Image (cartoon, rainbow, N blue to C red; front, side, top):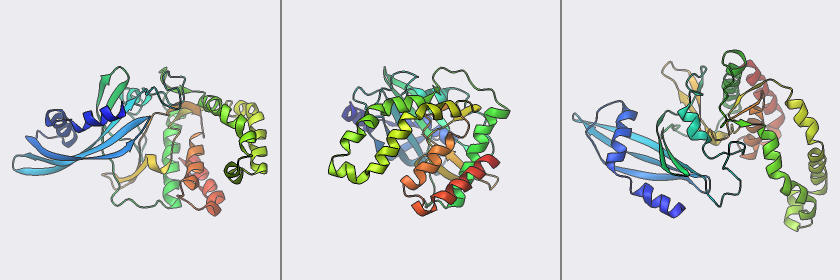
Length: 303
């Protein structure tokens, strides 16, 4: 299926691209004589490709670029993605862009414009999106992460104070429990797997013991967070899903991509990915985690 998909992407012609480029540039260009493609991501859950080139019209050449994100429900996926109750429901992101969920956003928080949602097959959808790039791409400072946390605080807070929670059935719900259930087999096997030399190096006995204790006490944590007010959460706020952009008014925006995990969730759940994944992806040193956590929490609350 994947190889066939790559062939179909490579076979896209100008009559498909032209109206999308016209919409992106907001102009009636005449032609797009040539373009290049760059695969940004490919795998079981989807394929992301950048298209870019120059458009000609009225004696003017205009550079353009678009992102094609193909989402599909692959039969060989490691997780069940077939229904809205799954943590990574395969149709969730297309449905987000077809809804008004992201139509009104607070200052500083932005999403890529979606130019088209095209159903290609029974379990395959193409999303044509604005290409939001950072020029140059730089490592974020802790202050930039803190600003992103403030922007996420505004976004989460908007559904606590001004906007009603949507009732769309495709939104994730109780995903902390869902993810825990999906991880159950691996967690319960960990004490046995620990006897393997490599696993034992990564998960020494004290870590395994703490892991198992948390697992068996998980209902206490679930019960506590479920008492919190609920809001809309992106749930995957890591650096790879965030772009920094300067708006027309000169203010810095956080542009957030990849909305397949969006859910109705306890306020503050957004911080889990932001705090855990920054050191995991080597965006901040491990020895800075404690002050980073406090800074991000404070800015989230300020938002």
